[in-house]
Image (cartoon, rainbow, N blue to C red; front, top):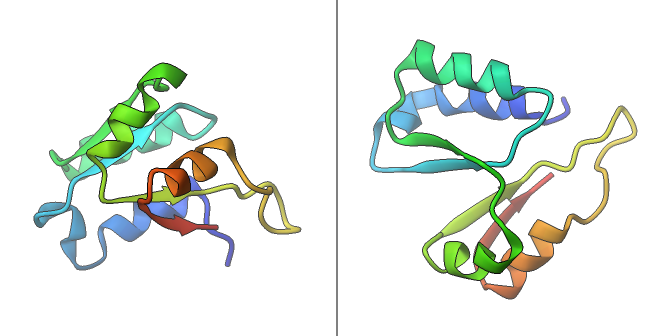
Length: 100
């Protein structure tokens, strides 16, 4: 099974993870943004936020307050889409990186 934003959001409901002491920021936008927004409304997850893309100059400050990051670079049935700039930035900031 390939991990997409849709399946990642679906995984949040397993064991009510999104209702515990875990906060999720979804940064950026993309073709599944409407689906994600609808899921957040449906499940009433208050500790999951959708943020606009972060300007490059603000990325180090943002990452300084983050414990872990998830990077979904899925690009088709062949698997991952390569290494994203955000993954490299998160690694440089020494955050825990969860990747596909």
